[in-house]
Image: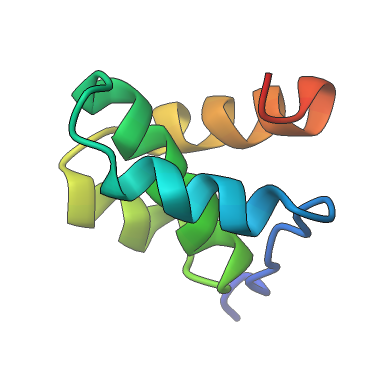
Length: 74
């Protein structure tokens, strides 16, 4: 049996904020990728799929998600 894919629940207003980050040209690429990771997780995309899309490790995706859960978008 496979694992159940759960989605990340974003706080009110964070979806729009993260979406705006992905469209800015004056911020670091690393910040844009993190915003994409959180948006993808909120849309129910699995950790493994996100790691493959952005060519990063699954641990990086988990770390990004855990940091969001601990501190939000700050």
